[in-house]
Length: 331
Ligand code: NAD
Ligand code: UD1
Image (cartoon, rainbow, N blue to C red):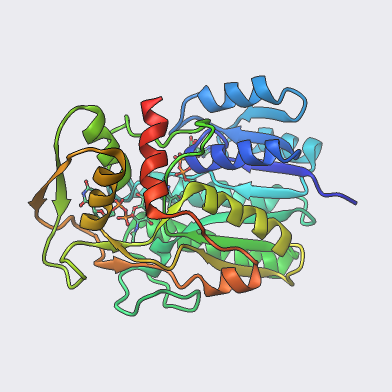
């Protein structure tokens, strides 16, 4: 029987919204959930308008509204649950640890506890679970170690999912994202650059949009190719495709598996800024400041396992990531 019903949590957000749009286009039926803690209604309104037959939405706080969640799970009975909902700011997680643990772990627990164990579960994890590791690139077997409350919340979610996979037979895949950037070419979902961004790409967009020509770069004395931090930036479209591959993979596994979603390429802050300037004919200049607390020098993936076992590979270039990010906000 065709499996075509997906419950998407965090459907109003950057990655969940882009995923929702892609699977609606592919003909899946989607029940979206969000509580708008870090999103507005724009994406949801657009999906309801463009896909009235196949998109339903419920405003639910997954960490608190268990009875509403239970109702949706019972009525919709999804084939897949793709769980994007969560708070994601590393800095904010240090200031409000209880909020982060309760929200991220509580939401995941409520889903696992109340779902039909026959539904397949796909979870948005993060490369942050690898902490500060000098041995790069990172494989799925690299040491797991939190360097922030946000990181701890992701590790705890992964452990919880493991428990349910082994004890209740919920087949699950945890996807560890590296640094997602860029926007969908249909401009349906744009990365939030308005809400005091901390991450590099939205910060570059904010800088360019405001007509400022300088960006602060945190640290120039790391042991990296040019002294600035190195990361594995991945286009949102490739990342979303990774979830489609995971939906296939999760049906074939025994209990749980973990995959890195990255390109395997390491890019420094200077390289990203140069590419952003070159591609978009901008002239953002660098102002070096002190290292940002909690930052790691290098974090990039060995994507071999996902390439090999999920038949998935990130294809889009750094140039394309820079072009699509800027073009989306221009329009
Ligand atoms: P986002 O903030 O744009 O989307 C998350 C969505 O979840 C938001 O719309 C928010 O309102 C919703 N949400 C949060 N808590 C909720 C709750 N209790 N109930 C219902 N809805 C809730 O973030 P994103 O960039 O789309 O990230 C999606 C997932 O991917 C998150 O779990 C994040 O931790 C993970 N992730 C993101 C990145 C990244 O750089 N963007 C990197 C690694 C992992
Ligand atoms: C971190 C987490 C990631 C999390 C993400 C979301 C790690 C390894 N990564 O990403 O899991 O999902 O936050 O918040 O913990 N930079 C500047 N100037 C800026 C902004 C950033 O120089 O204005 C530099 C940073 O120092 C870093 C690089 O750009 O070297 C990338 O930073 P950022 O985009 O914030 O991502 P991470 O820190 O990798």
